[in-house]
Every structure is written in structure tokens, then in C-alpha cells.
Length: 194
Image (cartoon, rainbow, N blue to C red; front, side, top):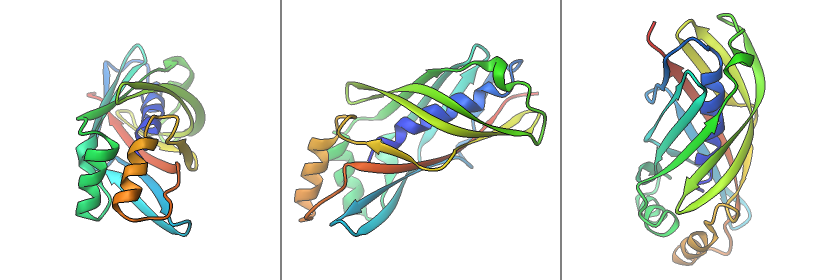
């Protein structure tokens, strides 16, 4: 489930790429959102979010994104606690880093949008996972950029090293199954000082 954080990485990369002359682009956490899904017992789908995300992109295209793992919100308090303790092993955060080509997207005028491919690395529980995503990028103003996933991203939880924690979660909740692939969507808005 934490893999959704990996996708956030790619999104932040794209947002930064839209304007090359900015010193730093900062994530506006108040209007940004990362959501991920899970399916239990083969037929019950649920949507979850992380409430604590922050990040920035510098003028060289270096992207850093931090996701506060204890902020996971599954709409069930005991499940939130189990996710933090069993799946995320009480880790404070997951980090996403990437490098973007600022020149390609800085041509966007206000109101224009494009779709780009982006790559990054998710660092979680001592494991680095390569990620890639198709992102929709729109320049909302001279100093504001919107980046979203272009459709859903399917994340392999086993590849991210989370299978053991998911197995424990499944046992604690007395479930027959929890899928090991998580659909993820993101809405990220970045601002810079004029």
C-alpha cells in the first residue's frame, strides 16, 4: 500500500519541469493528494490516502518528495495503526527522488498542458525501487503548476518489499486475501515565488 508513495515521486518531477527559471518549486500540501487502493477478499475495494506530504523541485530539475507514513488514512483507526506498525514498520517517511529535464516542459504557456513520462526512485524501509509514470502537467499560472497521474498507476507491493507486512495485516484482520498490487492516483500542485 505504501507503494503509492513511489508514484508521487514521478509526479513531482514533472511539476518542476514546467518552468526553468524558477529557483525552487514547493508542493502545496493543502491542495495536493495521494490516493491508493486495496482489494480484500477478492471483491471489497477501498481507497486510502496519505495526509502528510511535502516536496520541492530545484532549478536544476532535482526532485525530492517526502511522504509521512504515519499519516496514512484508511478510514479505520485500528487499520491505520496496523499499517504504520506492520506494513511500514514504524518508519517515519518514504522518500522519492528524481531528476527531470526542465527544458522540455518550460515551453508551456499558462493554460497549456502536456503528458510526459517520468522516472524516479522510491526509498522505503531500506529498499530502493525504480518507478516510472505517465503524468499530466498543466501550467495554471506563471507561478503555479498542476501535476496528476495520467490514469491509474498499478504498484507492485512485493517489489517494494511490503509483502511480509501485508501478510501480517491479512492475518490480523482475518482476511482470505489482500491484493499485492495497488492502484495509485496523485494530484500535486507546486508553487514558486514570483
